[in-house]
Length: 514
Image (cartoon, rainbow, N blue to C red; front, side, top):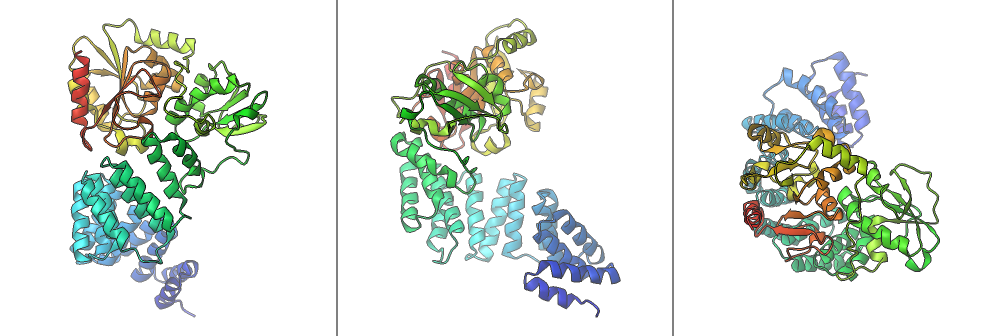
């Protein structure tokens, strides 16, 4: 019996993608240029996560019928799934030009433009999509996120509230979680953490099984300095959808039971988090614990310098013997830390002497005061706290100062600016791990950094560090203060309004003149 495209379509409608694909392949063997079979097979491959195959079949279909709007829309979806956003934009725009211009296509075009960081174009596209269908909730959600991307937080909040109000009772918990958390973030980012807390608590009262509400609440409580409640709520992180699961032997320590016991403290979350909470190792050892420490590989040389640690392991090592196992991020709860009892004995990290000597030889004698700079961190942190290095140009005008880049990752546009100006010396080849970064920090008279692991490292080494913060900062920097109870040598420079890095830079420049 000869396979037909109608048969393939029936299997596809029934979500039997495997059988639908087999029928399409049978058709293509007989007719290699069969448009409908190639088209449907490309869609099936995309749906199954076989994105490169999807693009390949769709391009073969395009060769025989290039002016098919639906094909172009599906090609855009396949490219988008591969994060080939430039190709996705081209395909979606061809679809629109061929009168295949519905809210779904424009929604996907908006997302592809966001992937290219063309924020205003994405916003304009999504506005057009919502005009075509004001009841389209996915478009409204993406429109609100696009408004956040351009800094229109109040408008985004209004959209999220409208979306939340019209979610039907049968909405999936994942969708409720997504919309509610985005609303709370939009409110927090406007400087209204208490209001965001109420939003989360109201939602949790209706749907207590959505654990991420409690996790989000924990971050707000810590931001507000309400540590007693915050550390307890912070333990819900293990159940949050995007968080790692705890080790089977994990527990929050009972400090009355640690004396004489082998306690393995495990790494968790980012490098900055680990660096911040390594301060608890000495107090833990002072209670008689025999501390073993597991950290990320690039932190091992620094951990080996800690006098109160019996053994240092990498995150994948399994040879440790222990009686108790905990996470470094749960030590504040175990110690019942409040604002007045933060362990602030500085420095609590030490740079290996061999690394200091190596860096000293590399740098040579100073020609003047040395200032270390960090303006961007990992790609994950860019939306929260990064700035273009060119924005620091007013700082770099200060005469007689050596400026040194302390970061290992430098974005292409920043590198081009650095090479053109020659004002800042970079050292990526010297920075193999955080011990090398620590050695470079030790050679500085001052560190000026955004919120990155380097800022934490400078604080842990008791070096003067000025930290430039967004309007809505990470919880550890609290609110409304220019100092940090975590790092006595730190000074905080906060945006006075969302996105206003220029004001932060002006404050830094004014302080350098003192």
